[in-house]
Length: 295
Image 1 (cartoon, helix red, strand yellow):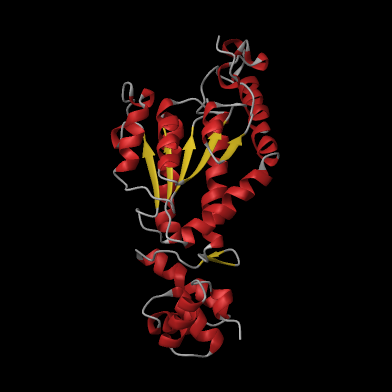
Image 2: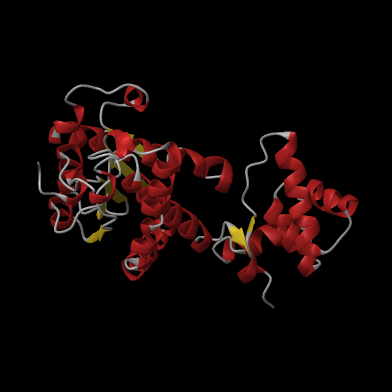
């Protein structure tokens, strides 16, 4: 058996196939609780990553997740969810999976074993020095991810690695290596379990707090939410109502007067100014409401 952590056998589940369902559930639950405990130990390194991603995003850089299998799918998922949550464009936070879109649902034979495939995928994006490439691989040695990190370095892009082993190959290739040791899986080698959970939590942290840092959040409210349907229009109006402490009708009037721009509506009300001045204030203050409303 491979001596990497993600491929090791878990002593607690040697008789997994003989356990009752309840016993198996209790064991899985106990194992899952190790994930946030281990992430806690790497929070200082994650803070450094988020300082960097926030800075690069403000400079016009893109965040590009690359991975294969479960790791790749989690990157694609996080990138996709940023569009409705933070009103990013699909070109600002990007998820690349070895084998392309088809690999989201069907394994693409040999795709993860190709370093050159990642290089060509990134080259098609015209990767540059403002961009951030985040390589995700539970094992820490996936060739697709290694190739992507090498290419990113060659064009002076910023590099981050996320793995669930220690002293990994991708850690050696990244400026910001993140290693979270969640221990052997309940089902040997099935890194969609604890490793996948760890990666999902880490990606949640990176994308959410980067978006907080670039001004897409006021308090704990999604003030850049893309109002693409009636439900989200209603949510936008209620956010204005909450921040400005007005009635729903007044918030709706503000929203319409701001051409359905939630941030502009808030600045208009708090500063008692017109739309054009509110837009100018936001543009002059990194599009961050709390900076724009300072007198």
